[in-house]
Amino acid sequence: MMGQLRDTMVLMDDERERVAYHESGHALLAYVLDKTDPLHKITIIPRGMALGVTMTLPEEDRHIVARQYLEDSLCMRMAVAWPSSSSTATCPPAPPTTSSEYELASAWS
Image (cartoon, rainbow, N blue to C red; front, side, top):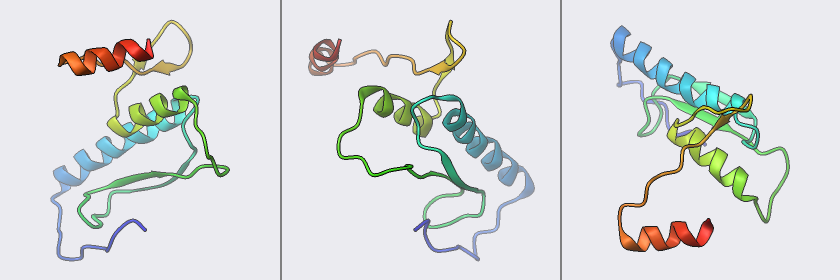
């Protein structure tokens, strides 16, 4: 599920530390953001194409998801958030870069 273990991939101590900080950022956001799935597993052992993985699992099956769930999940996966006026973190709005993206963003607003 997480990919094949890469025994031949040997990381230096400083690389392993950077991977640990990177994955802890994903884990921290999964914990702080309200609508993300709960954390299941975090590893800094290289597997597949990844140097580390932060895995969440949903508590129940979903057929339709809310916009806030999608936004929080995207923020957690991209590791982008900052504190807002409330007690929880919020995902920053991404500025549109093309006219078609602007039209799409306007439709959601």
